[in-house]
Length: 587
Ligand code: GTP
Ligand code: SPV
Ligand code: MN
Image (cartoon, rainbow, N blue to C red; front, side, top):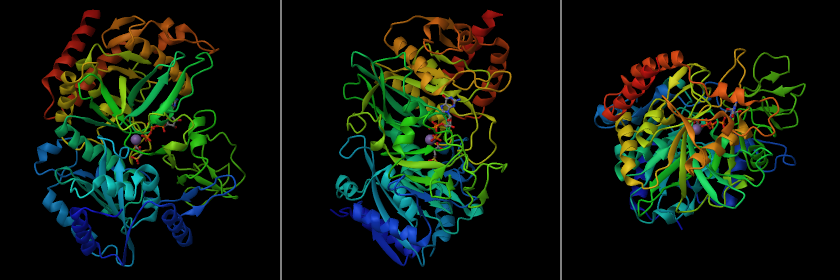
């Protein structure tokens, strides 16, 4: 099967004329093709082979030192009208942007090969799924897209002769950070990316398509594209319930999606459906909200991943995985901080320099990543490729909050849940360029990923209420409260199951809760602590405390936050006023 779409062929011809590659390769997704590309990337030094006995099929790659994370300041949403991108997105006139970048793409692939990558976001044949084509001059991108998406002939088959596909153009160009642009034209289903070779900037199926373009499509078509993990929890009776969670980048989605329940929870199993992105839509009868994972791999944060913190991720990455910007041992094994393996006497760090344990720099970049096939995950759900998706019982919001947010609370209802999501905040991480550890409001973890006006996005969330009979319950979680010494209070990771269990009990009407001004809180004794030796119900009570003075500041900050939006739904302003009143009553 090759490309049957006239629209694809015509567009590829135009882009060839623009970029002037020496060679054009249409990819089919076969094993033979993969081998050929790997060999080429190894021969040029673009990739390195890891120890094939210990890490079969695994490759290593370093990006340019200036190119290690998404660049939100250089990410644009180019709608015809500026107000449709909204005040929280960078906007430029599409005509001007096409001209400006067109000049940069002019002849950029001279002396290079252009790879044509057809791919599907979503399982083949699913009514949720959508086709994209990415043109790139990077073999690294091809090999990653091969893991992260259903790539090759399967996508031409899905597309047929249709002209409905997302056009993605990528060139590393000179990897010049001053000329780096990640640009979306939602009204044209088009993405142009230039001067980067890193993750979310260049794997165009991921954040660019599956969130920015897809969120725009979803709003127009009545569904949701969200920055969410999806997991299933099977109880000892064999019943499985699913939940999704939106946490900002590097705030624990991959870890939660793969958690192993503590020993006390015998008979419970947690299954991963997705670790980063969820596409959700009501079923035909409007009974349930169904979710799929549009990706087929994990592009996960390496540092901190160990057999202790996330054994499922460690086992997933033992074979057929690409490691980017981690450190290398002298015998060609990947290494990163908190991998659970003591640092060897000598490493080559992510920059390519010599590194010893007394060095004051990190050996692996804090945003170094693994790209691993989802199917290799020991706890992958047997529903993960279900074309119809899985029904969602609960939606979690969360982030890194040192003080304010309690361990968990439940929203009063859907509208209040949308309010909770719209006010989400987190301390920034290394996943995006810029300062780390600054509190930033990141509604629904979508601020960097919404392809249209955020006010309209909130309205879209509010509108979903009438389309779903069994609405998922909405919760907020925070694994990251700190004690006075700056240490995490909550053990986190597998022990987060204790919180998930309370959440499911709430969904099933099996436990009551305490009403507070911010939502329903658990009775501290309803968070099971079996097997947690150093942790008492008083400690839980402490983690669940809602400090009135801190929340007064929080309310003032939310008021400032809301001023940033030009199309904020009245409903959310009303929700804020109602919360303020609930606090006032306590005084
Ligand atoms: P993206 O891939 O950027 O979207 O990140 P993510 O949301 O999938 O985050 P991930 O699970 O990779 O976790 C990021 C960091 O948070 C890692 O360093 C983890 O070790 C740490 N982390 C995850 N869960 C917990 C937790 O429950 N407690 C604590 N203290 N840290 C956690
Ligand atoms: C994130 O930053 O949320 C990621 C990594 O998942 S990237 O693909 O670079 O966006
Ligand atoms: Mn992410």
